Length: 286
Image 1 (cartoon, rainbow, N blue to C red):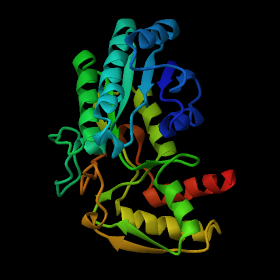
Image 2: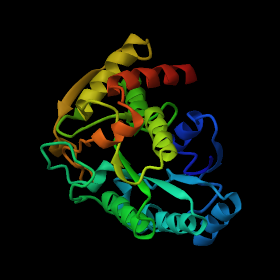
Image 3: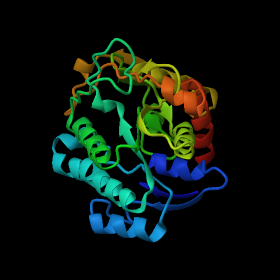
Image 4: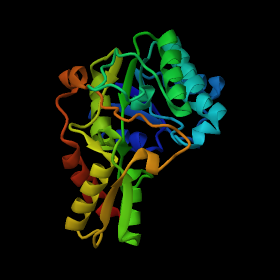
């Protein structure tokens, strides 16, 4: 199978390359390699590579900055996926497109199913939902995979930020009333390859197993990192969303129902198990 990865320099893109299954020849394109907002550039890549499958892991992910840079967010998260879908259609390539839990408003008392109504509450969420619509308009059989709270060793993410702050401070205050599921980019990448290999079509949800608040996630990071002698220790104090206002609203409870996806990929590890794996990787980098 021949594959193309867009967004190869990001967390998920790097994980896709690191977890490449046998029998797949891949060509990877990072932000500096191609302007995915250019239809001509995207068509040229797809025409020249003639892939069987394209995985689009490229995205504008600066959630708060998107409130001011809305046009840029929509260019990368909505217009560009439309170009990619059109190019895939032209060469009969399948498309796996990454999306987010932020397409939901976070008011559901149960995990969101793939067919639940969407209602994003931020510019970032609206741009990602527009990207889903652009993909499905052109390629109804594309696989759209929503995920949440992604992190990876060596990246710019919540875990790496917490490790840095815990090394600098004796106490941190972290929001405790937003609930989701931390997801290791490596486990997500393996699931994406399985979905691609199985010719998956439609909307899918994938996260690691379990749930946590940001405070609970930070507490686990502190405990696991201290056990690995990565930090000396830090008190993690719970606060509310109201105590920590941000430009963009966040869904308060954005758990994703991954039942249908797990039927294809197999069950996911609990997020804390994956956190330990990532911390071992992060320690090796330091």
